[in-house]
Length: 485
Image (cartoon, rainbow, N blue to C red; front, side, top):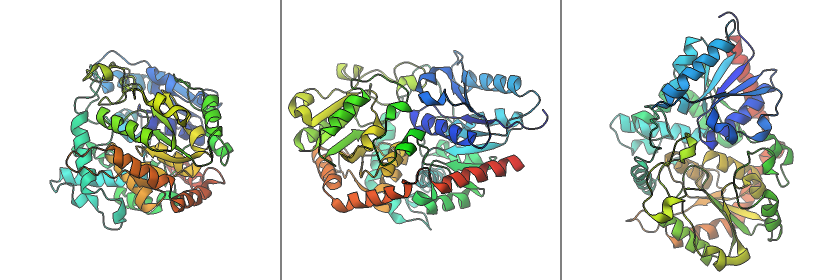
């Protein structure tokens, strides 16, 4: 293989929280006179933002998965075949690999392709998750890992956070789709030896994260010191339509793939138009995680009793353990515990109780349209990183209800470091379950606190000029660093 092509390859993990930022990264990289190629399994093609397929400098390469037991056995040969047939005489400039796909690194090293590791989460969660997993692997336990010298104590997990995280890990055990072994280095971030994602970046030339200096400068600096190599904040990696529309209502359907839903984007916006400014609480746990069925019932009762208008997004399979089956192209993650769980949680009777005060969306929701609408005054969120930065960029206060490990750090970052929201605080320490009263108190905390709203709007101000100039400069520096070697 002689010389190097200008192509930049991007390999995401399977969840939407990984596919979306990787898709936007492709577009950003292509602006540097490069061609970006997003490599995905073919069953994820419908999850790719629609405008990506129309981009002149971005190509989506789909690998047909083989009917084998492990992801590595299924996708590895397809990746290697693509590289050997496409780059016979030259190699790509470099490849950006989602850290959850680090098992593919030997394939790219075989073709002498420089590797950049991509953390799709924020820098705070990345470094804290690594510290926690390292402490557990070293036998020192989770306590020392919850505070790190040189970083604010406010972002550390509380004892209750640790209990909830550990309970959730037990609940998720065995919740992966049947017939599909993810392999030893696959899956969502978790504590323990297998979650030490930083260890898998040792042979990368650089690291990038989906954040920016304006939000997480001290955490980016700390991450660079721990990694011993350049770290670039290149986010928030939001859609072009968002940056063009910042300050007004975003038309989310322009950049997100079409999915099944019971309300169109236009209908959702029309409903929001009928509500007073800042009066609506938006409730969504993303597409991959969520509370238990019992906690969903508590949430439904809280929304029924609060006087606030709300939009609640309920995904298919809500309440079940494990990630959604179609995330891996498999079947149901696990057998349902009851007939109600067969199709996911249903808040029976809630629509009749609340009337026009509530809007229940089943399936896909135009999240950016909702968050950017002036009637939206708060966001009850799992604090997945994409949702977190979308709310921050829209100036919407966040009520954090984290589900798994990295989200606890995101919730603390929002509530205790950036001070643009609050957390759902659990009153029943024995059950470690979120109760109705906890949700009601949390909604009041973010919806009725004018100072929190002012701080959220002030933080939004740093993005009024569009995609951060520091992130654009970081991408330029990354390309120059890797291609000159």
